[in-house]
Length: 437
Image (cartoon, rainbow, N blue to C red; front, side, top):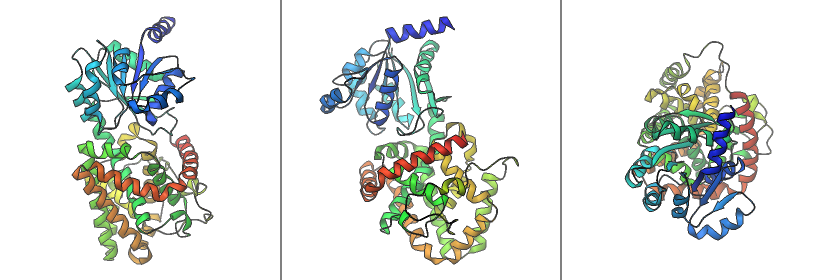
């Protein structure tokens, strides 16, 4: 034990950590590492140099002018930039990497990141990359942290593992290919669903927390998480969706499932809808252990209402967004429980809510009846279906500009509610994670 601590102390004395990109996650990493006693060099765009010098004054983070200085001075360099820009930025700063250093990245899709590293880094540089599976507003303690030893020695990997212990996250060891497949399975459809909700509400000129019929814990989860996503930066979600080929398939299927289920609803084909949904239920939830307790409940979520309308039980709803996610998992042969070790907080909430809908006695039947007989939900479900198809097309075309435009237009529509939504969302996530961890 003393020997291990001596090695760690020597690493902290002799090795410097570099962060290229001081967005939300870059900032989290830089401050956490510095607080744990590591030497940290960091930079953002040169235009932000003076601002960052002022912002980080009084911290142990050493702000440098650009990535050339960070690369030359650091022993482990982390590119904390969006997936769309990774190749360009590595091509600029990669050749300046310190001889024998280690390089990694924080992008949500590893295929373009690894390709950029292999193309632009010197051959003597090791590649050990990472991905914290949570947003910057979530405490990293206990959250999954993927570590990928793509091209590194055992000693270097041990050093990187040791560095990340200060986050107190759960280390998950994968290859780059495994990472991209699992993140597509767990995050792509989740994000598509919440993004589609926001666009649909905007299209109907609705603030759902002000509408009495959007009542109950499930609705609270939908509203809070959707607004939480739109309060973040667009590229966080665009990068995973557009640069990860596996995500394309998931998002296309989600749009197809939404469309096909909606057609059955408006055609009032109740038995066909029931048969399809029960087949999906059996595939996704049929093998759960009898002792398995539901991840979430309506009662747990009731207290996290964003509006002033007090929850009084729940209002029957067609829940197209939830039905479509389970149907899409079924159509793709994905069992979401297989990926719980790599799950994000949002995915755990989304899985918990769908599980509650499908496994609570009588609730799925109520949902089917409402979808077929209550026409008041059809305008909402129409806009949701159109939104899901729109996001699918944007992703399939690989159009970052259009993705940003649609995201930020919706973001502006809901912006006044973000502070309250973030506060309530943080409380909700903390409560849920304490139950599901």
